[in-house]
Structure formats: structure tokens, C-alpha cells
Length: 263
Image (tube, helix red, strand yellow):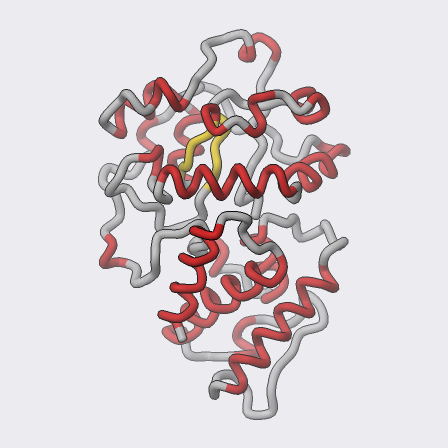
């Protein structure tokens, strides 16, 4: 759910700097203070480790990571830097406060799974932390009125909405690289299950609709942009629960409530 979750890679010199902790971060009451505590003044690390990109996939599909990820989302209430009122209406990234290296993954260091080294961020905030550029930040939290959905770690960001391929966009929100095809058969099966449900409730082509690869696009299923936005949210939530159910019952319950609202 990964790209829901980028790996933050740094140099050996950077690794020796201040160790950042949630226990310290939580003492800062404002978003600005928390941002200044976390900013790295560097660049976003290579998220796939080049030829060893499989480490990325294995790590973010591990049961241990999913359990910790869901716990952090619940702890932070899905809010940017854990500040109440700054609900993330997009993809929730679990940021490693002390950017991790390939060695951390191979040795399973404490920086990987200890919630004291993790925090919820929006994509914009995550980039601003790494680039050390607060101009990238949103000046004010997004109003709840702009979205009718619940603040859980499953919102579809606009960048994903712009992907035409149904399979590619669902994989993106599951945190799976498009070129990583190991899970494609399972994901396609779950997508078709949900498309069948949508057909039964009167959405999509009269004769039904299914996909078999990347060539099927959203406009093939529906042209109504207003309804399509909700269809995408519904399909992703259902597929996530089928393919990669949250280990946290609180997150699962929130997702099911959102599905019921969309229905």
C-alpha cells in the first residue's frame, strides 16, 4: 500500500545526525514546529534501490510492516504530522523520521518498525521534509467539506485519478509498481469481482465489464466523471480489503464504513 510508502535513503554522513523520535515530536504543538524538527534539507531517496527493488516490495508487503503502518495511522488519526485538524485527504505516507538505508532493511533495524520513528504525512509534506523547502507545504489544511469521504489511509489522490488504466491505477494505490507483475493475476481477479458487484447495482455497461490487462481504461467502464470518482474510490477500497486487508480492526472498520457510505 507502499509507494503508500517510499523508502527514504540517506548517506552514511546523514545517518549520524540527530535521531528523531515521535516522543519528542509530539511535544511540539504546531505543524510548523513539527515540520522544522523533521526536515532533512536533502532529497527524496531512491525508493526502489535500483536493481534491488525487490527489497522494497518485500518490505512493504510484510505482515510486520502492515501491522505497524496501520497502528501509526490509528495513532495519528490519519492527520498530517499527527496534528489534529490536518486530515490527509489523499494518500497517507508513513514517513521514517530517520531515513532508512538498504542496510537497515537487511538487518531489520529498529528504525523500520518502531512507531517512535514513524509519522503520518501527506505526499506534499513528505516531499517538503526531504527537500527542506517549506514552500512546498500547504498553508492551511484542506477543508473536510472538499471531500465527503472518511479520513482513513485509503483516499485516492488526484495523481492516481489521472491514470487511465484501471489495473495501473489500482496497483499504484496498493503501493505496487506497475512493472512488478507478480500479483497481477490476484489483483485482476479482485478488480473483476468488484466490477461484477458494480454491474449488479446498475453501473457500467449493460452487458457487464471485466479487465484482463493494462489496456482496460476507466472510460471503457463509465463516462460520467462525477460517478466515476466514487466508483474509483469504491473499487479501490473493496480491492484493498480483498487483496491486502488491514491488520488493524479500527482501520478495517473505517474502510467498511466508507464503503457503506459510497454504496
